[in-house]
Length: 429
Image 1 (cartoon, rainbow, N blue to C red):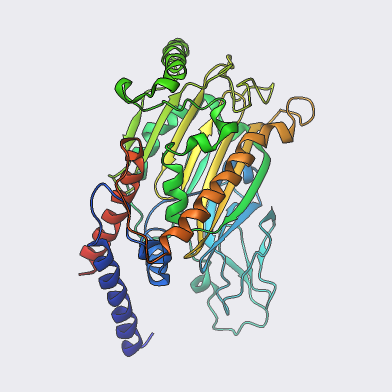
Image 2: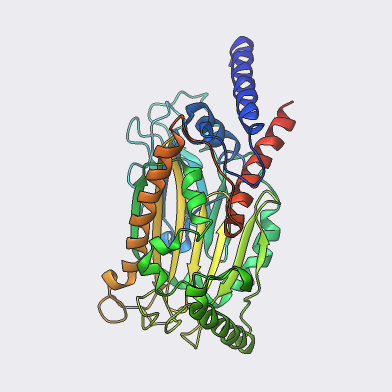
């Protein structure tokens, strides 16, 4: 890069920083962001650079890269990443870009490889990223200078996180230390993928995340609401009369769940750090309504083979939220992971993955349609809600009102997001 080109690039980034900062200055605490945050291509590019380019985000699970040579690819915005287990069975992540002329190396979403061979000019790399072979290379060519570009990877209790920054936030170690005891009983490293669904929602990625961060709209999810306590998080004086019976069931179920967890050494207490630090999260084991075992219409088990070494089916849901792009539910019989990847200002891919015990047998221990039914329906409903919101925030008439008290996690997400932008601006200046 020439000096002039570098200066032009820096100037372009500064203009973007200034314009996004000006938009952030329009935000009023207690309410949503202004519309441009959800519609502007400039803001979208800034989000990719500042949020997804500098922070840890959830990518996949060990269940998808179990053996040496297993890989998946992730594509969002202009970014393409490969995540794989190398020949020494270590987890690796690289930019999916050949060091010759930039061709994409792995073109399938998942698979198994020996070496990594670019199909354009056949530059060949090991699964640890080392350049092994270049057809017709000159005598003075040094392959050591052209290894694949690394992406930071961290495995936390069977969940795989990535960071594109050269100096990733170190606080992921603290997060890992605290959430791994919650995940331990589910033993995600001994699971397999039962099903996976990708949905492209016609909305900005922040609207997708905000929709997930509240249950103010959950009466629009009849399937989920059959086991999802609608009064969770409400103070007694906030519970409407029509929901009082559900609230009494919730209080009893929570008390029984805490006793069962205490007897088994399972963590259930809430940890909630949704604004700070940079790798912000929330985790808590919560009761389910009905039978209280799983996300079925009556709350009964969806897989007869329990996860890990769990010995009791009625353990509710261990739920976790991760800024900026994921949420999770871990039941006694299966787990569901949700990952959000921005594709454009008004397009977002939501990937839902259902995990079961590695020894569970489809058609014997579980039925795919039954296992996935509640969240397939819920995802479709949420996709429509997000599309409606995107159309609304794109209108010149959009004038946001205040959050309700039950939407506090939405405001926490917005605060986390704005603080990350502010921190970037401070560093840049």
